[in-house]
Length: 335
Image (cartoon, rainbow, N blue to C red; front, side, top):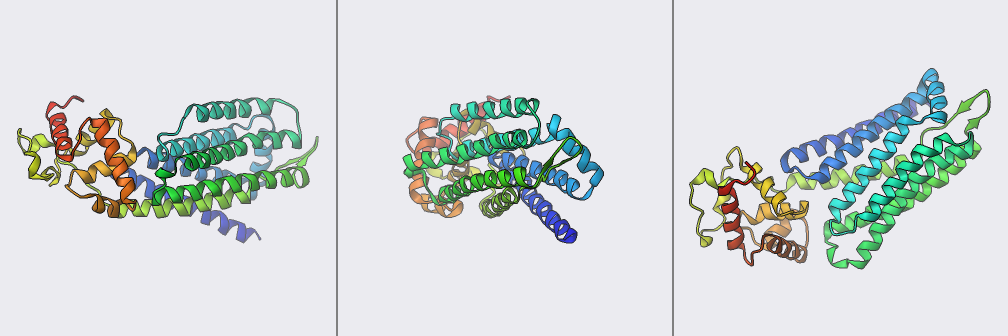
């Protein structure tokens, strides 16, 4: 049995490390906040699993950890807060138009509960009450995301449909985790004056993180297979912007500051991560169908994002967008 648990732990750590590695590679190419938040999420999954593994195999460590957990569960509180913040950040990147005030309030309430519950009482009910807010938070986040998508079906491209499935997975497994916690804490854990023995692993939570990992690996692989486009700083090619009908010839061999130009342009006009992906390809003179094929999204979604980009940049056609981009690059307002 110990061998199986050891193999299981190694499997989880290797899986999470693979996702973390893909996130780092993807972030180096595209600098997306979505992959940065996902990287931090899986980094803390790794740390959490290492601690749980140590409680399962090192008796001395397990005793000390469980005793400290009953009075000041600092490490677990940090895990809950960071992973919850990452989940909120990911959802805000995927659904940028969704109202964020409620999520912030829910995150604050979670933090307060994790800080104050450990100071009250002793025993199984206290431990159950400590774990409950984190699961209620993930349930809230998934249900609110599903309700948002129900009200805004126009945003459901191929990628979003996959995210909708992920929200359903989160909602179902949040309920399963609460059920498993209730059974294990009140039926199998030991809380007495002379001994504390806590089963720190939740297999329902492991299954949810494994599904997260599978989704993340598929998504990140597709992103890496897409165009990793570097943008040439217009000043590198001369001081004169190309005429609108010259096409997007600015996307040839990139100079060393090309990606900096693009990122500052995107930040200045407050483009979302998906709008940045589309803008990169727009600047290579690709049509909507080619953008759709490159990013695995519908043409309707491409048109919506292109329209949003035009509105933010205050242009009405692609040639004007190119001209604004070149003018911005020449002025270099970030220096």
